[in-house]
Length: 604
Image 1 (cartoon, one colour):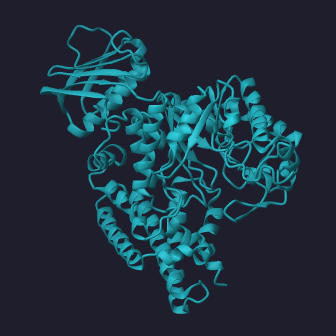
Image 2 (tube, one colour):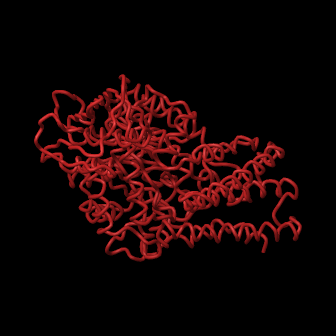
């Protein structure tokens, strides 16, 4: 099961769901009883509020029997199933477990006693919808259904420019943004599944989609752009704390955004303010210190959030560099401690906030972005590192992140292994699953397939290990296809294992052939096509590595070899467009395609 229950005791015998029977419920738990009825839809089960002892399934709320507000107890004996929750939410989680038991065992469920509750009160998932890819409402609802079954209780949609603010159409008009009506619909859909849809609007850095327009450049820290720490030229990026209108602008955004959500929390971002102190706030930072300037602007945002009677969440990557200011944070903020490598120093960073008595979440990642097919082992180790250190040091939650850097070319299936693993450890960190059993559970409970799709994804996600070069927050073949100029100028090319690259190409092509065979007899053609498409991207990236290794640069590649590569890339891009439009809104697709096809311009 995903997640694995805290305590499960097998008993002798089985309980066989009869063709007819009654489900005992109260008026108060009627909707949950309907959910149970839908699990066994092939049987003729009726709901009753009269408990005469003949019901085959009994649903109850009893805080004296179950102490944890999200906990439940389930007793399956030869004659019936009894599920007791301390609250409706706890009862809902018990029903999700029953659903998974039914998938695994059918109508003959082994007798057992389950006593279950989460290790972390808050278990969230954040999806990036600001790097070109904005899913359709149908896609988001399908994802929410998965989150609910995996017992997540928070969901965030990372937003920079993809909410349709009334007076800012110039910013979002080409990106198919979510509207107020969309958010209201999603918020209600989440609530029905005991998930809190937490608003997430970056409001300091990562504002380039706004500040690139002349109408907003007066708010920019560096209106003429700047050079990022790794040498990349950037346009205007952060709001400037030195401009009084900046905080007024932020206030206007939250005034319009927050009434759409019932959540009591708000993620205001605040990460990666690379250009702070390089432009309009340079003198201010020199006089007060960059850390003080950052904190003062963050506290101004905090006042806005308090005005709306909400709890502010913010990314902790900047403030952690100024330990002297950490203790000045208000007691009621939630610091989000993030890092995406297997060896990220979560212990050190959690300790900083824990020692100050502050509330914090740990925020690992799916490792799907900047990769095409994921980085499987890195994701699992990163999540385990975050969760275990978070548990030991008093984190109040886990927020798994799924970013879409550089056009969000990875399709959603590449994130599922991380999604399942964070669910498992976030609920029950003391019971680390065996990888083979875990992958089987992903097939059964997330993909709903008999074929070993999850093992294929896991293997694809470890191809990066064969290349001989490991790159922070990326795979070499992703960088090769999207940023060949970086690969050409990098000393790391000397360490590339050519035979390892060739081996990875062969393995990936074998996987594609296997997927085509599975596809012939599968009703999950979209899922399989998405995996094939991302695998083909990875192969093309590996081919670029070999071409650069052999010919030193793009323009020196012989014309006959380039024609073949160009044809293959155009075919992959054509499939990518079709797959994108089947599950996402059209806005942002053009920008994503430009990034994928940029390598073709280097030849002209």
